Image (tube, rainbow, N blue to C red; front, side, top):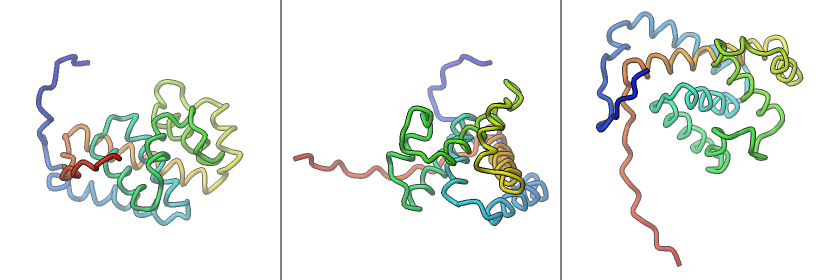
Length: 165
């Protein structure tokens, strides 16, 4: 692993969508399935955000945090995704889904422990568990493309400072 200091933000290495449009189209097909499988859209965004945090994908962290806020999620809940285990703002099914997302994303470490499976199986079974897993697989694929090829994160203009009274 490189330990060099990055003084400047990374530059995009390759426009993977232009380089392999059929591959991206195939991944978009999986994404379309996930988006229409019946799982709660905000739950899916929470899972995508957590996986993107784990994978260090700046583009996707920005995208999914923004989508959650646009969907009406509070800043507190969005900010707490990174520390969901210590936060009381998530429901039991959300906590189970976040645990599952972490275990599947980090599959090489613990091979998805049985206790995590038992936990998530209380809230997601059969098709819903398969769909949740496909959602994790899809975002991990997008993360790997974006991180590998340094997909640039759009920069928003700064908000003017607000006067505190």
